[in-house]
Length: 163
Length: 102
Image 1 (cartoon, helix red, strand yellow):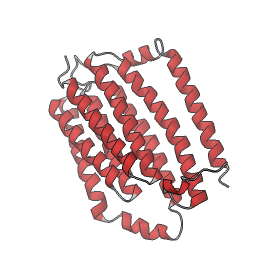
Image 2 (cartoon, rainbow over the protein chains, first blue to last red; image 1 turned 90 degrees about the vertical axis):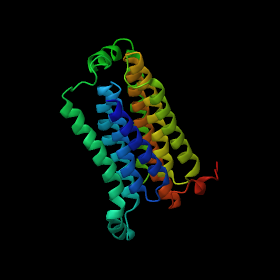
Image 3 (cartoon, chains in turn purple, green; image 1 turned 30 degrees about the vertical axis):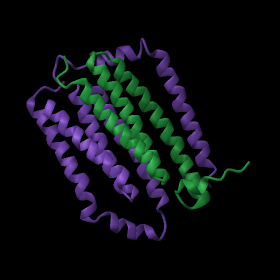
């Protein structure tokens, strides 16, 4: 599991470096998603499987998709088609693809080793997290809920004035 | 006893955080600045998870979840602001919005 950690760490650092140096927002988003996958494998390898799942579902699945939607919205117009063609050149997707294949190989390796929960003695199970979340940190959960509600209302209000 | 030393995990979180901060300071495109903020939030959360796994306590993961909620709310409002700004200035350059009125 140690090797898995270091390879995933290297992938995360390289892809994050690519995120902040890309010129095109969609290229940067692709690298960002790979970076988040790397972070998920890191979380898994240090014994936090629940957070690894959340990282993929919430960060890569929801937040990054929101980014992609907005980038696509901003690029509507006559340039959009030419840009689409430019985005799909092999030179552009080969980088994220290679990094993602490395992470995929690690994922297959983890599955093939057979322990579905990482390095049994050090893992913090989802059950413990859930128990602590809804007892010790109950107030924090409610505050987070209020924050999300405020974010929802704020985003709705700001988006409505657009038309 | 964790197999991976905590220092390495914290070092990784530090590197990712610095990369995010460099991106935030260098880039002038609003989308990239928001992405850099996401990188920094994620790195901060990673530091919590690493510390939590060092002492095998769930608290670090719970802090990560709170950071996740903050990031989600921040990005929703931030992207709505980006859309507003693009509507107004027809560019994503933050320097276009450097003059405030009212």
